[in-house]
Image (cartoon, rainbow, N blue to C red; front, side, top):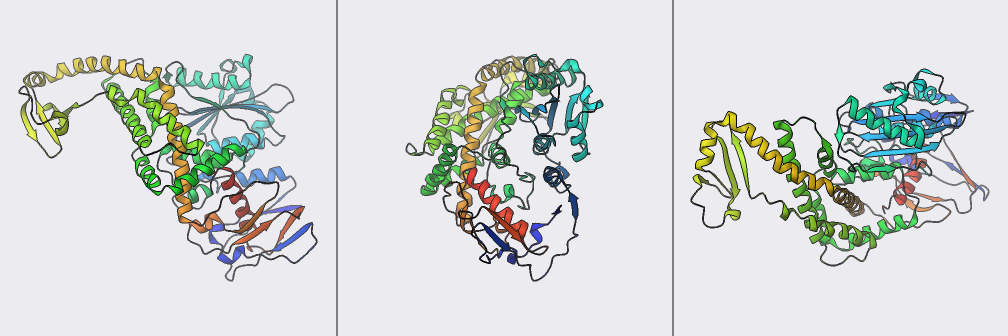
Length: 526
């Protein structure tokens, strides 16, 4: 019989982390956490469970999880299906409607369907689509989902949407795009969606908290110093699923150390990353096609082309920050991606003059003074000079403004034709934007790790088959300004460790500290 305590770690005092060893046998360490001087006012919630997997699931999907705050979270859709027969074969497809990121997976789950529930909780879908037979029948997967996620919106799908001739993962993918196209009218251009297949093995089961949580009371909020949306998403996904590949971990560590050794590069990258827009959102707007063209869509198409220009210019500026070829292989590969994007440089998309609409006078033209040079062409009339810009019009434009209501349609048609040609060229090279987005997200995450090291005393972790931490500190408590007592952890001579102590004595804080440090080491942070 085991008991689960739900403890608010943010209310614990600094003495929670003080521990001692009583010199027991070599195989067992007895750690007794001393209670704080002033006991926090918390309701003790204890539940009796006979199954460890159920105990984990209950804590994972408790009301204090990220599911309680969905404001600002990107709209997520999920299609879930299970294999036929007695095997617990599960497949799903997750689609982010704001970034067009698509993830599919297929795996064999346990009897408690812990991996399925974990995938739902971490993805935070607002709607989950399942086959009608799965929703209405006696599916064990649905019974567990409804038990642990009673607030989840589940919508049944007709079986004909699921074509499982090529596997269950393909069936979920087919059902997802069938819904987007036929039910939502979302049409994406051919060959433009980046689909990722996720392996469910070796998952780090960690709830990193809400990405919008400004209180920094989660591991994600404590170490997140990213400047871009891409970097923030990459950091969160790495915390949820830490890497088990040592070459990837060592490459990130080396990149962090090289950035720390070059202070000028660190400040340059930090300043440039702030100016980079959400590339994934731009890709989403580009790859979606519309059957009917409106003036609003034409305006959005123009903004997309200008956004691509801005992204390519930003990638070029980032590459210029590396005065010499990086010694680190990871930074070198990132630099190669940023440099390769120059062949699609924004110089090919010249927009020196732009039209501006003002309700009182109609359309006028504006340009930078530096673009026009020292002399202004004679055909420009009503010229207004400002510090950095020049506004003007032409006789032809004045005539067009006089019959504005009829000309707007014509302007939009002409503009649409030109912009769509440019947009089609961009769609044909959409992989360049995907690569640039991944490269910028990765360099943003590495710079974030370096930023964390400048604020805290960090060391380079080494990997072995044991855990040996000297003077380790709880990253979350330290981030929120609490004075914490450092702890040592050594499992070299212990088969297992027993942590004992009274309620609110800091046992959970001590264990979470160890887990957090291991996760930080596996994602490449110092």
